[in-house]
Amino acid sequence: MKWSRALTALGILAGLGVATANATCATRTFPQAVPCNASALSAAYGGTSSLDRVDSVNSFGCVGTWAYLWATIGKGVGEIGVTDVLHYDDATNRWENASRLRYCTHHRLPAYVELWGCHSN
Image (cartoon, rainbow, N blue to C red):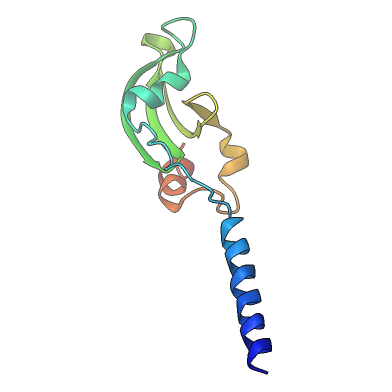
């Protein structure tokens, strides 16, 4: 009886040893910091002429990979104030315009970005 218990205990220990030796270790990288500044957000609107580019930024804010931008685009007679929602694309490492029509519904955005990016002009 003692021998069977001892053999069973050794079998269990051997099984645990094999299971532990075969365990895999996955590593995760910490998410990259997303640049949240007027220059990085404005780069999404780099038109071909000065009339298509951001002339000034009145307000902006970010939450994770989402942002809002209040800006003036163009100069002179063609100048227009805009409110836009942007999303950071990890593949290209840059901000891109996100459709307000698509994302400003059903609480798809962080509350802060939705408040300032969706409830304006």
